[in-house]
Length: 146
Image 1 (tube, rainbow, N blue to C red):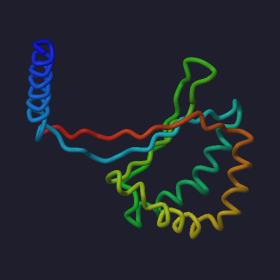
Image 2: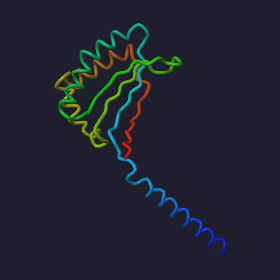
Image 3: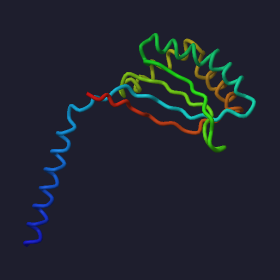
Image 4: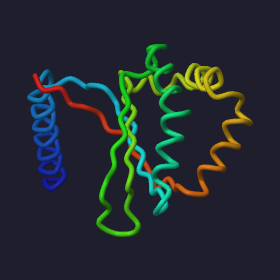
């Protein structure tokens, strides 16, 4: 019985401690924009071809998406991989917040207007996959300190 009381007291004290730490961080930051990061491996000798596609199709689509207010910004980075399984291109698309990621219907409508139907888009994806591979991605969120 005494062990149960001591255990309960320790648990209560630790919960109070956690609550106090949570209150300490409240107001210390604000959740900022969300960036979707894609890690891509473009085959050796095919980078110029990939950049051509970025300029001809991807960039106009992202510009239209930005103009529609669905994204804040986008960026493309060229990277030097440390090993063969790492990306040599990193693409970042920044959204205002997590809710903006849920606007798939609006995003698809912009892409359809700029690129064409889903069938046309899928055919182009298959072609690009001959010389580039999506290695993975992640969502990162900016923390705005106050």
